Image (cartoon, rainbow, N blue to C red; front, top):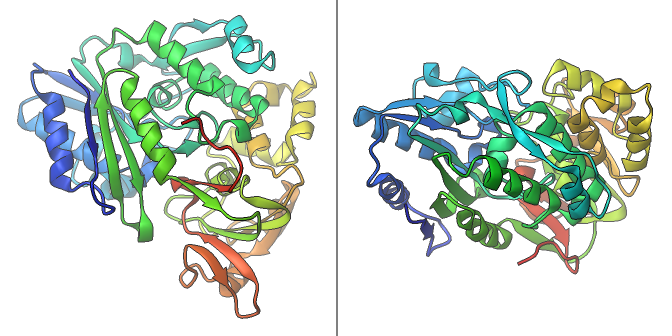
Amino acid sequence: MHDIYKIAAVEEGLTQEEIQSALLESLQGRNLKKVLILPPDYTRYHSNAGFITSFYYHTLTDRGVEVEILPALGTHEPVTREQWKAMFGDVPYEKMLVHDWRHDVVRLGEVPGEYLSELTGGLWQDSVSVEVNRRVMDESYDLIISPGQVVPHEVVGMSNHAKNLFVGVGGSDMINKSHMVGAVYGLEQMMGRDHTPVRKLFDYSMERFLKDRPILFALTVTTAPGGNIRTHGLFLGEGRDCLTKAVKLSQKKNIDYVEHGLKKCVVYLDPAEFKSTWLGNKAVYRTRMAMADGGELIVLAPGVRKFGEDELVDRLIRKYGYHGRLETLAAFQKSENQDLRDNMGAAAHLIHGSSDGRFVITYAVEAISQEEIASVGFQPAAYGQMAAKYDPQKLQYGYNTMPDGEEVYFIPNPALGLWIERGRIANDR
């Protein structure tokens, strides 16, 4: 199949008809009997992958093709029935398969430690086991479709493509170590860039272990002003080029530059999307390069009710907290902290979620106690009190001047972009 690229000519994005036309074209000439779709979960609702998955599902089943859907959960919770309906519409919930990243995987090989040492300048030297959900290697599938959004990302630099396979439906060693490689290398050297060490890790794995599998990527570049999804580009292909093209568009659409370091930034977390600090800390990752030293990041988090997405990670966050890169690495290196060493993804998350003392992170919550928030290293605040002062329904995206003259920068959804103080180098166009 030849690659298919659709880039919107207008700011409102591609029409549904334009998207459908490209998706139909991607199926031309294929004799299909059984297809596996690997969409993102509800935490990537604004990717428009729900619409794409639904269209593929109905088009293929109408042709008599058997279709199964395995959301690329990574370590996230399974998609609920309500989330499924909101994202995938009338696709039967019973068609969902649940990825088990700890058990339901097969090992394909490994990425040598020598190669990773070369990529990271010696900062990481361990090999990485390459695992994927066993269904990806099931030859009964004539086609595997991997939809998802390309957007700045704290672990890999720019999300999706092979990451959707090796993390989204990958195994524990790759998930844990890829996150740790990114944390050790430095997320501010990664976010918004394409050819990062973690991306090269995924590219290496894709080329050596999955090049013979029939995988079609359906990559989007979107924004969502006012919560309304705009698909600025759709990139369909079976190789790496579709990602390269999507990255260039995302760097234009999803990176916002601020004129000076932000002294006060308020980020709102939609309660339907963000229920843990594991996810909610995108508010930290995506703004840290815009925050001024000594500034304050206020995270309005009405739906956050826990720290980790599963019980084990939740316990680790409560035990070790978000106390900075050096303290976390020191804890990680102690032999008595085997629980942290066995869960490198959690260790990396603790590094990412801290400001390293550069600015204050205030978490305004309802469902977690103030004491619990303080115990993991954040400044606690009551959601009602903070939302009354910084009302997310009244603040406008970007700069706002409060009644007392205070300047506040407001972000209604941190998952959709990356914010950087102008003058910093953020990408490698």
